[in-house]
Image 1 (cartoon, rainbow, N blue to C red):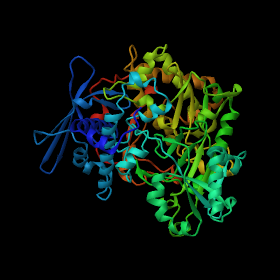
Image 2 (cartoon, helix red, strand yellow; image 1 turned 135 degrees about the vertical axis):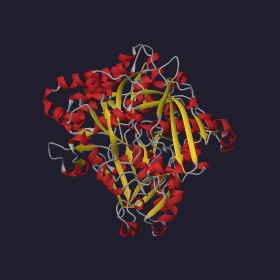
Image 3 (cartoon, rainbow, N blue to C red; image 1 turned 180 degrees about the horizontal axis):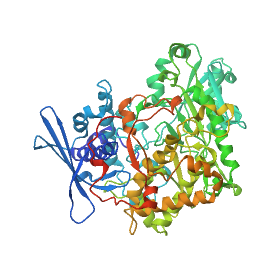
Image 4 (tube, rainbow, N blue to C red; image 1 turned 45 degrees about the vertical axis):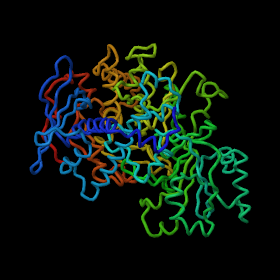
Length: 634
């Protein structure tokens, strides 16, 4: 994997051809996702001879302009269009125009519901997303047939899409071109974390009950680095025991801490200790780092005050204070139920956190202000450090096993070939057998957590790690726990220390933890990619999901009331519109303290589980709800 890329290389690689290919890719996504959310209403105009593809047309009229887009797309369940980027054509008042994502956003601006104030920022995010795609086409264009043999971190750096739903998913506003090369997952350049010492009267360290600060930090840094940092404090005539070490992103130090925290630095509430010795690689989440020199040491996650996909990526010291307790609660719950171990469903705990309180900004602003979230960090377990519960003393990850972000199951190379199909082909299993393994590891434990324990995770691909053996998933790790789990309408009172993850949600929307988070955000994309496997179809995919759901419910009749309360076989479910959330406010999509607030929606979607049991409407029918003319924001 080439990590020796320079700014001049990027400039040279940013060619008209790659820029056009990046625009075709993003326009295809805009057409698909905005159709799915009923922001636009393309019309099916003709069948393409020889396959199940349809030709579609979108007309946008404003003042004296008439934009017309044509494209080929296959239609799948959940009103999903799989658009062929190379097929897209564009005309303005009858004259051919290049396929241009920014021009399409401008042409649609009156339909998007985005304010005039936020539109330029959204366009900047679109531009950055295009830049990222062009970079990946130049330097990360690995055919999936080769990528299936990549190691964990090579796979992490080779992901080219980001979130499958959000259009502007690689904004990274705040990074310059050098930062892009130094601190993005696709650059894969080893980096070092900067360390500060924060005085204990302003810094809080929280950890699991069995963790002692000195032993933990020394173990994470190594004895030599730990003693070196302590000696720096002694050389300043300071007592090292009065300070807590804080991991800091180098960009965050340069752009924020060194300026915004100047008073604290001058008064020695904060001491800059310089970079640590370990090299890390940036993960898909961009503010989380994997230790390359000592893989069994923890991931490190830091505050990073760049705008990326609807949030300023800071870390709140208030959230950090409660994170270990939430992780302890979730880990205890999973350990108390043999079901999870039997399904090889594991959790990577966030074992320790640190948060620094800037007194001036805390007095002047509310807790939700980005200025409260500039200087915090956490440590998350590495899967390489875990023991096999069935073989105490033995590592959980065996020598013949590899790790892979579950986001890879949505990955396609520049030729449109799906990595999941390549994995199935390389394995010894049929597509149905392979999918059954995945569902047993991923889908069924998430159902059990919800129906048996009222617990909902945030199960998007980047939040899970698959353990692979002979190209087949054999175990799974759930991560990103502290801010992204919820107790939904719990039947029992939760412990006081985790009251913050308790949410009361109307039953019809509570079941969205399955319908939206799993079906619409994950399976909607995996099913068409699995359908590219030989002798496998989209209906076979959903029939197996249906069968697994029924098998689970029959095996656990003790949750019968919950199955009635949250009906997974309802004819339809609410169509939650994630892009509309970002368009409404691309600075902060949702308030994490009010996650039960009503999310934007646009009607309903037909439930594939209901269709599987009551008769399919074929996904190739031209008549489909995506041809409705409703374009108003909900």
